[in-house]
Image 1 (cartoon, rainbow, N blue to C red):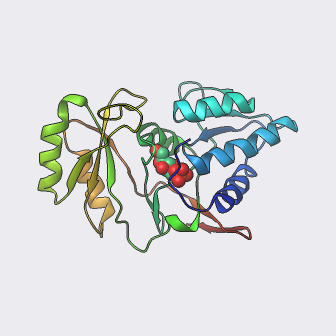
Image 2: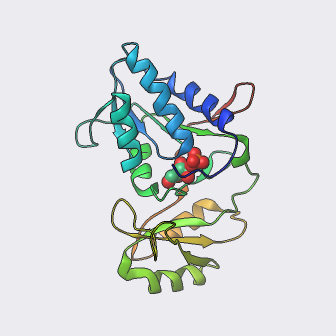
Length: 227
Ligand code: 5RP
């Protein structure tokens, strides 16, 4: 599994705490990445003890983990998530950068629909101001015009390369990823609006105004923040 580094024990503590929020009858949005995977494994244990939930996956990865965990899968056409649990690449207050695993389009769809979105992270993800590159999922035919539009906004785009394939990565949706470095993002909502307006951009990895709670795992336990 791809990992963005950080403290695995802290991620596990965050994932287990978020998984404890699931209740019988709930539909749970299942995020992607190493921290969300801890939550899915913690749900597996609870399902084994009799918890009755359905899951809405955000990627092939989370769908596979959920199947292994014995969690029945449904889609947004079948149910609205009561709870969504997902990781982040960077967290500043309640604003996030996501998409390190290239899954942010489906992740945003699921967490936006959820009644409650709990972010799970370890302390390495926290920042005062967002400054990591923002992933854009783009149509493969839109690479040049989107790159020009990103430069006009002051960003520097880089096509995400595959690690065990020559050339770029192709997302679960069959698209490309541009990682766009804007330096310090002082006004994430303004940048999010501008990126959403670029033709050919399917979704960007700025999650502004979506997170309800942030669970930051530590070696000792979990620090919880809510709006
Ligand atoms: C995938 C994501 C992940 O949630 C993000 O990359 C964090 O991953 P990890 O928990 O492995 O650090 O946005 O698209």
